[in-house]
Length: 251
Ligand SMILES: Nc1ncnc2c1ncn2[C@@H]1O[C@H](COP(=O)(O)OP(=O)(O)O)[C@@H](O)[C@H]1O
Ligand SMILES: [Mg+2]
Image 1 (cartoon, rainbow, N blue to C red):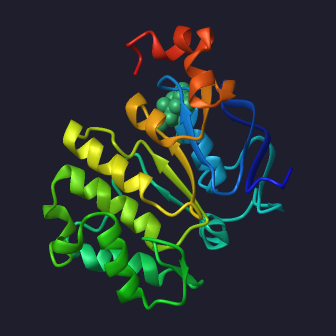
Image 2 (cartoon, rainbow, N blue to C red; image 1 turned 60 degrees about the vertical axis):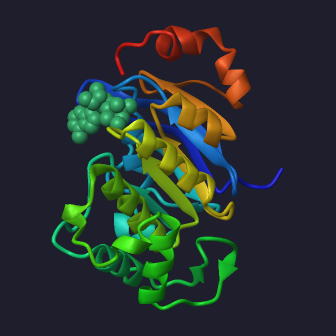
């Protein structure tokens, strides 16, 4: 077995008396598309925050490409090749779509990919911004201030901003939250079309999105990994229904 791209080992994070994460171990292989699901408050966003250095874990280790990343600042972790979108929007609303993308692309000093296909030669930030806009369906909206985009388009742009840094690992926190069914379908197609070289870790509530995208699913509950497996395995797990899929509430 080859070493995982991302290895989370016995990670805990406490807030006072609350254990938001309690001994979480989770490995993501290169090229994998992994979904993290679980009820509200399960610790999903906290897991992203400890991966990207926004929060320090109280205990445990995290390795990316075999190297420890706990203790590094968020920008240093981003430079290693991990990029994220936020559950809440993170755009410059007065700047044009193209500028939002160009700034993100310029913030990254490494090589480039063709986000529509395979690994590519070096591309200038402007060229990469155009390429990413194409990939997220905003090529016609480059000159539009980000704040004037529809809600769904803003979420697309946010994925674009994360893509523009050319990550090895892309973390998406509920990219379809608040979207209409049409916007959700569009976002799903966009994510399906991403190159496999870009490993994906996605928190998502919409089970249609999860089942159409994920190779494997990890179910978080009360800060612990309740179960993990292929979509079919997770669908067949009675415990998952108890805490999540079957309830219809606490979402
Ligand atoms: N910065 C924080 N300070 C205190 N409690 C927090 C903080 N971040 C998250 N929590 C708590 O940790 C638990 C897990 O939160 P979170 O990771 O956001 O869950 P999820 O994303 O699965 O809905 C919740 O009980 C939440 O209130
Ligand atoms: Mg969350």
